Length: 137
Image (cartoon, rainbow, N blue to C red; front, side):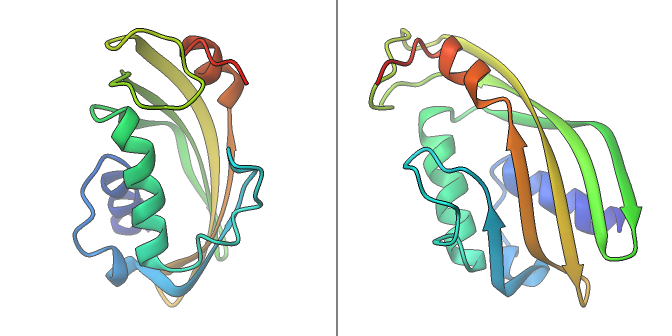
């Protein structure tokens, strides 16, 4: 489990190499997406990497750290994380100046299957991030 969690953390910290080795081919995200979607478009290791890269484009130095967990129960892993970084610009609706520091938290639940992450539920304090980025719709 620790290798899987470490790989997951490295992925979110921008190390995309080998994602297909620990993310299941028919990966599934359950999340309220910024575009109003439900996450179903993030349905493969490649789609996950693209989603993370898109997030990191506006926050390239974003660093995730685990604050609680991992807590494992059968095929589920739960963890609480904290992300910190600086805004680089380019997010539509954000009025924060380039260089604005961000700091927000979230909780992940991961379902594993054959030593790969098959499903991902995420709850993020997105309102905190959007406030820090002076977001307006």
